[in-house]
Length: 339
Ligand SMILES: [Zn+2]
Image (cartoon, rainbow, N blue to C red; front, side, top):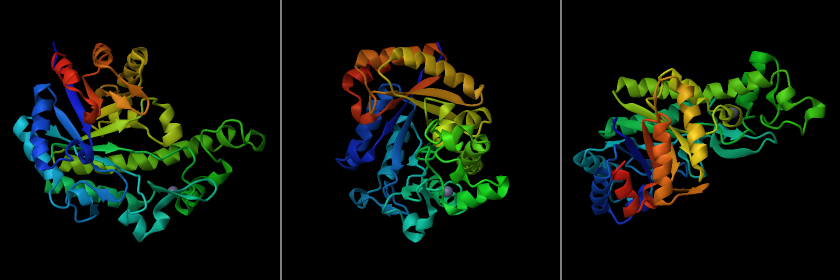
C-alpha cells in the first residue's frame, strides 16, 4: 500500500509555550505517529512574527529564543520536513507595512479600510515576499506554506489602486458592480452578478492573488524549496468570494501541495469534497486533505478523525493534514500511527 502522508499545522505560541525544551519531544511524538511535515505559524498577521526577523517585530514571547531555529533543528533530527506558515495578506494594527503606508490596506464598498493588505499593490506583494525570502535564506527549511492567500471577503477591494486599475482596463468603476457575491440586493440597479462587467471583476481581483503565488513560486523554486497552501474547501466558489483560484495554481504546478481545509463533522462531505479537490488540480500538485480535529466548524473524536482520514485516502488524497497539533491526543496519535 502507498505511504500515507501526514502533516500538521502548529501554533508555536501554544504548542511550545514552555520553552525550547518542549520542541524536541513534540517532534519525536509526531515522528512516532508517522508525520512527514510540520507547519508552524511564523506570521499570523497581528504585526508580530514567530522568528527572529529583521523586517517585522518578533513576538515578545520569543525574544529570548528563536522558535523556528529550534524547530528546524529538532524536526530534522526527528526526520520531519518543515514548512513555515505565513498568513499572507492579513496585516493588523501593528503591521510595520501598514504603519508605513495605511493606503496599502484593502477598502470595502463604503470606503472603510480593513486590517488586510491589498494584493493588487506591488509594494504589498514585495513585502510579503521579503518575509518568505528571509525565512528561506536564514533557516534550513524544506518549503514554505501560504495561508490567508486571498481577500478577506467578497466586499473588497475598492481602494483607489483597484478602482483606477480596473477602470483603465474596462471603463467600469468596480463600485458600480459592488459586492461580488450579493445576488439580489442591488438587482434593481443592475449591480452584482448581473452587471455586464461582473465576470471580468471577479477574474481581475483573483489575478492579483495568483500573481503573488506566481512570484513566491518562482522564488521558492530558485532556492530549491517546496511550496504548500492551505486553501478553501468550497472551490471553485472561493474564486468569487475570496479571489482564491487554487485549482489554477495546482494545475499549473505553481504549488507542490494543496491542503484544502475540509473541516466538517460530516464524513460524507469529506468524501465528496476530496473527489472534487483532486479533480481540480488535474495531477499538477499533491492533494492532502486538511481535517479539523478541532476547528471553528468541527470537533472530531479519534474514531471520526480516522474515519475521515481513511475516506479522504480512499478518494485519492495522498495524505492528510491535521488542524491542529494542540488538539491531538495520545489516542489520536496512536491511531494515526496505524494508518
Ligand atoms: Zn485594492
